[in-house]
Length: 307
Image 1 (cartoon, helix red, strand yellow):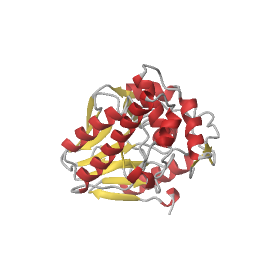
Image 2 (cartoon, rainbow, N blue to C red):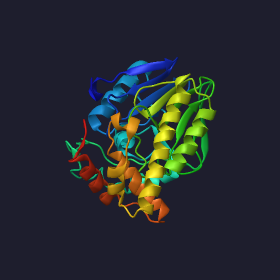
Image 3 (cartoon, rainbow, N blue to C red):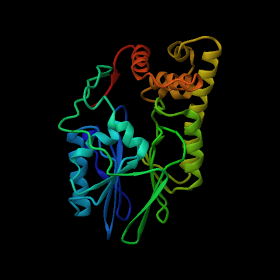
């Protein structure tokens, strides 16, 4: 199975998850929520082909060819490059920090050969949110309440947004949650990621649609969140020890024993995560080019994609 075989799965009545296997680089999850007042789309996809497939399936199950709203959970291209394929009438929503970051994202214009194959986005153009939020925003589609929430701090990115359905206890977590894959925190912070996991767990969701990986819920929430938290703590401990011992992020990653996390796909993200933690500790901005180059070195070649 691959991302082009993805289907919409109904989680509860009128709420659908679009889970693209295998969820690695540039292969995201998205969602659809419908009600009497119209349809909300949660994220788009990295490429034109996959976004068209997703939107076509959404129209089939909702009977709504033009979603009333769409929301981006954050700025990364796997969740946002397909925005331009949304109907012009669809109101696109995102956090103000997400909008600012997508406006200057260089990868949509020219993706460097640090991935193999180099992604081909297709016929997409940069489309930014029409409406921005700073904290929370509530939408209603008929009687269905949808809460768009920002954690209030930097986590996966500065502009993360979740979609929470309090009555149905369904959570679209975006990349605040990865299920079975290495989290990518190169534009956020592992400390913020830990806070976000505790925040999300406090909602007591019955169904969680992560940004990448399979849907889960119920009794699995505490265990999975605990596993992700353990990875974040490992990154923080590795960064602290590496800086103390005068190691570069790449050398710190090479010294790190990933243990149970070594089996997760995209383990090279450890390097990106360490670059970010070093930068935060030293009061510097991110150097994405250097971090990507070191991730390729750690990986022994370009990072794998399915795009």
